[in-house]
Length: 141
Image (tube, rainbow, N blue to C red; front, side, top):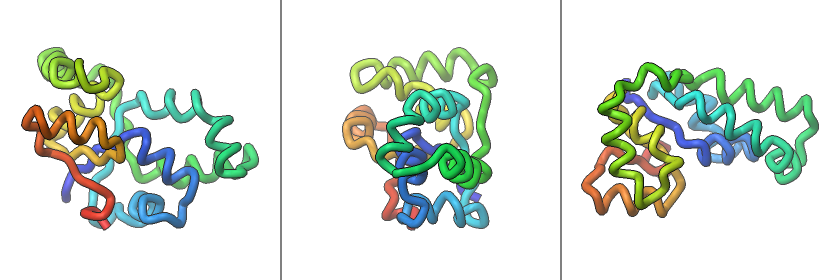
């Protein structure tokens, strides 16, 4: 199966609307794709929990239920498994795009997976640098 590395913005979108294409891919795509994300996504989700709840009009219970529904199909990888040289290489690629996305590029390289992101700045910056292992929502759907 194809390994798909899921960026935080994709998970945010799914949390906000489980019936969207993104939500449906993450909820029902486990028979077609192996989804992975770095542990960093959990930090990011909970850092923005109140904003997600507000935009999505979710109660605490609905947020947790949706969080569990979305994340149950994503294998969360501990950052410590990424070899230093892979992380440093990803850091060089991301340094003038968005350093916060380094871990996603590193996980993509490490797993030999394809990065799924909605961040156009990241997509365009990576393409300019020759990083081709990217996929858009429409292509997954």
